[in-house]
Length: 216
Ligand code: SF4
Image (cartoon, rainbow, N blue to C red; front, side):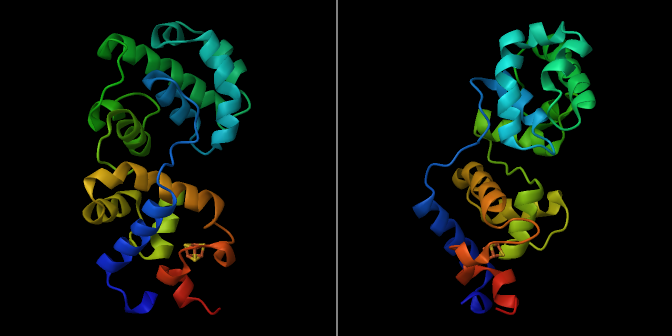
């Protein structure tokens, strides 16, 4: 079926499957407010959500808000997040991010992408994740999972996060963008894995460009 589909039919079929079968997915990070979300997302770069969730209870116990984190010492923060990837730069970014939140944003997480990206440690993907989850902004954060799954399914041939983001946003309705990000991430994390996609257990084979092109 995949070979005969046009791009709109492909989007409709795949989003339709997710909407029917995964109606209520959300972030796997544990957070209770915007501050905890942005800290968790910064920590999750190149690291699993599970590992981040292991360090954040103690981190948030010690530093429950931007003000306390802004006053923290580098060594103390580093000791709490040592088991995540790139702990040195993340500890530095977290403290600098908290300081800027306090001095520039009255300790409130900003809602617009440019302001979010002005915070230390916050790139476009992190800004989109935060804006989408916290403020329901109709943006799609493209990480390595979203990019790979979008390419394989045939939703986008873009090779950069920016191009894939533009393609996804031009086809996915505003009200489905936030959840689509989670659908694609979770599909990439558990089924359409990087080295060896589990096509044998994938429910999307009939619409997948990679699958229909491969010799199976
Ligand atoms: S069929 Fe295979 S390549 Fe296509 S989305 Fe599913 S797991 Fe990924």
